[in-house]
Length: 309
Image 1 (cartoon, rainbow, N blue to C red):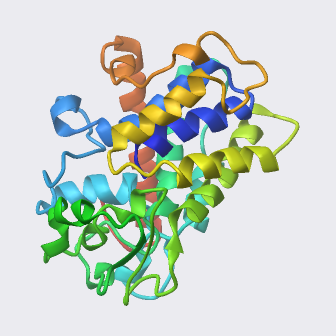
Image 2: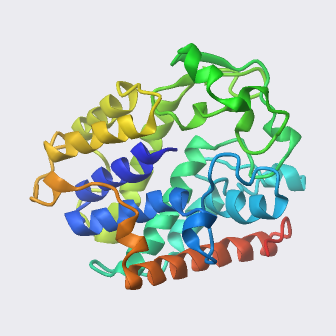
């Protein structure tokens, strides 16, 4: 998934679930910063994201970034490679959510841990059936785009001709675009409508958020689902920033109908500086990142399928 989900959708879901605008901003920023926290930014701390093609051929970097933060193994199947394939809403992903430390309102430490987990959990829908290793299981033959048919989208992505079988490289960026519908001979022979997958992810995330916040209702209303569906399906720009800015503009105008709309909602925006340039927040985020990594590492070791360093 891209920033329009990891930041914007998470912000909206958090506000609907009863979190304040400030706590929602911390959660959503932590969620998106998992992608933006590259080696260049982390400065000798743990990176969780990558610049395009920066590390796709360095196996150790793949292990430490792709597996724990973007392609959480589903632990299903019989072979090691099968069990490393990411499965949407897997038992392992749900265990990750259930075993989070107690979430306290206005506690940035727990907000960062939850935000990181939300990124990984959401990605199990976008990255389902792919794994964070170079594997034949990631092969995509006969890729067909059913919605989102700009020729530039294909020609601009060098993955189209890549022999690499890491993650969804051969499916290019299509699994992450909420408006896209696509299929292939080897994966999703029946057309996969991304907006349906993202709506399902949003429902589960909202349910978790209401549990943490002890809200009275744990399911999205029909109106809320339609608002999300509109933002997923009709926001068809190939540019991530354009899609994200559309979400933020709608948040500023209270299109998502927050019952307790605050002046902070009317001014929210995503900035890495919330974490990078705040000494306390930076320490807390990287501590939370290490804690998440250690949790995944232990889970894989217990299942004897992979060892992260």
